[in-house]
Image (cartoon, rainbow, N blue to C red; front, side, top):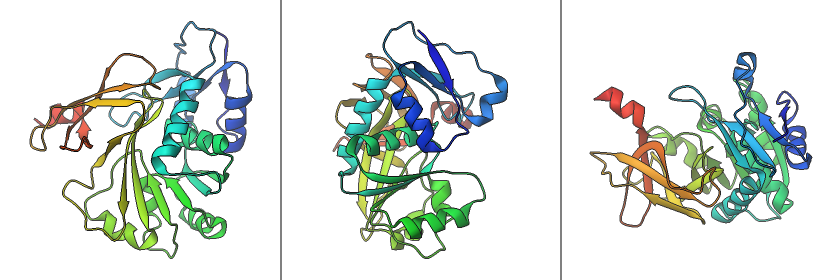
Length: 275
């Protein structure tokens, strides 16, 4: 399979144009890994694939190749889960080389939304605030680290989507004044993007475990987990848009409630270390 390494130092819009417009498979290497020159373990396929790296929050980032078509399908399912329509204005503040940011951008392109994508860099809180105020979006899609830089500022966006990792207990009280709804997304590079989502009205009381990354599976996803809050267990995922057709161990642990909502307690490696 022929592939090219995409230059992720470019603006997000140019990265997306290369990913979506090019005929070759492409590998997006995060800046922090660029000097390591990681070996490309691409699949032997004539179908266009996109290689992304997992976040590596609990170890070395993993190189995951998935078909471009799967990423597009997941982006469509994501729009459905979030309630995003073509007339909505979207502001994304994330990393376009990670699956969440790339998926959000693909979603906006697929729907024909007006959108702006800001590649986030640590310490640019003033820039983030300026963009929120000036662009006046219907949806802000970002990560908790960005939100934490904005809690004490004056701004409002009707719907705030966040993913990557969970909020800390008590953070909803800081976020609530800035939006009507929050949408929490649970996703993985292996799944091609979003796996589950949970929408919460900002005026609703915070429920037990609501600060954890959680949600009901989106279209095309089946989840299995036999854990409890006291004894979290592995979460198994089977997704129509995953890098494999088979059910796989997410390496996340957690539990499910009676409605089928999954709660992520942490990573399997972390739970083992704590015991």
